[in-house]
Image (cartoon, rainbow, N blue to C red; front, side, top):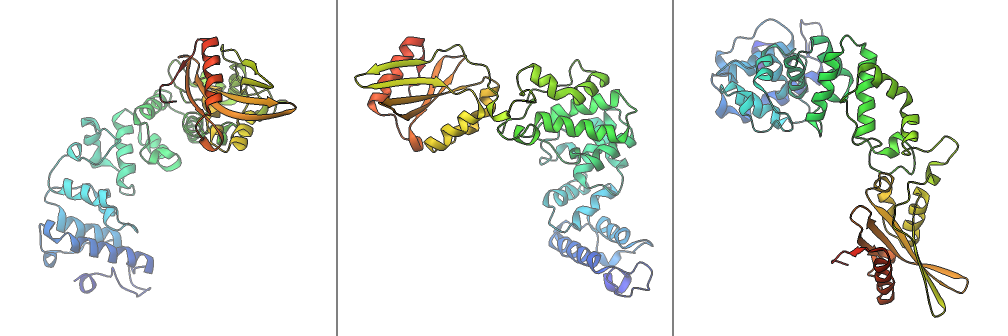
Length: 370
């Protein structure tokens, strides 16, 4: 039927709207997917009259002829001819075609579709996929214009759903409030916030910074566009002032974080000297992890933010010193949370005694699971 009534699968390059082989593949995929949903057809394909227009205008017409009991926005038709199956997009199309509201579709998390967003759906540009279309509806419903929506969708990661939609809504509201902003600056603002709040510090700051973002609590509250611009220029010095980043002349791996109030420990048992000392730099944690063959280096970001502290228990016999335990202490709760030997082995009886002596000295509580 398609071959006889249209040029959708025509190999004739000179014909009007002749189909490129790559497009022909998409059309074949769409036909196969439509056939798999024949139980959802509302009309017979034999009753379809193809319109004049490009191959995808015609294909969209066929999709609408078969599946629309109620009008579905034009942009949704592309869900049927994607290179890889867009199951959610096809389900959403069938949902809308049956007359249900997009707000009742259960698979749009993390988006929360408001009534105002649903009302914008019919005016979404035809070239957007359904995920970008939802972002378009969000921006327009919040008061943003088409230019802002197009820039955020085409040039930033906001074209896709995010892990923290409520936060990104505050960013969108901020950008709407301070329009007009240049295209380049809007992209720079979104990219900056993504790097500071969500990407691993290793990528933003450098080696030794750990997997936690540089500013995981970054917020636009009480910021103006001018103050944000200043921070984007001076963020490194701002964070150095807060002791989160090292000065330029200090290697990041050797930049110490703030020492916690818990004191170190030292005692002598016959001819052995036992000690417990806090590790205060990324390099010290890396060396501890290599020597003890465990993943303590993953705690760098938490140590920088003083969410935890890492300590090393050592035993010295004569001139020879050996690591015995790596200890995690939660400074605010004053709890020895965990203690592991080499390769995460359980502490020896002697190491447990030393740990208890330190806990008694500093008023620490030992986790019951130890």
